[in-house]
View (cartoon, rainbow, N blue to C red):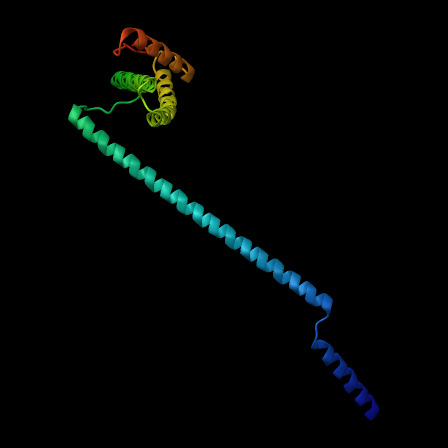
Length: 205
């Protein structure tokens, strides 16, 4: 009996000693589970952060749009009062149609005049560049300005085409190459007829 008790104590001691150190396989499994849990928790946190940021951006956009609409409504009320308009216009109102047509024509002519002015400015810069008395430094300054002016003319051509296409009926569009050709013809006219040419893109309106 005493021997069996000692044997039992020895077996228990071995078992308790084994519990002090987890098996390698169990430790790896536990580490994998911990890593997976951390990853999922981090991912959920990232999603929550992204969703929160998206909601904030949506709220800011909504607030900005709401304020813009309110500002437009206030301006509209002021204009309606100043013009003595009792019933609010709709897109089907004849007054709205006529005013919209006049506004588009005004935008078209402003774009046309702006383009003509830019072309004439470039023409006179070209005339300066051809002066024999102009020095090298002035030539370089003019060349740099002409390059910048060309980009400005491209933008003006784009604005003109948008305005021309919005008219009813639409006006013919032009391209940068055509404008350059006009510039060359006008430059030739200046050489033969003096410094005051008449340059215009003959609008039909």
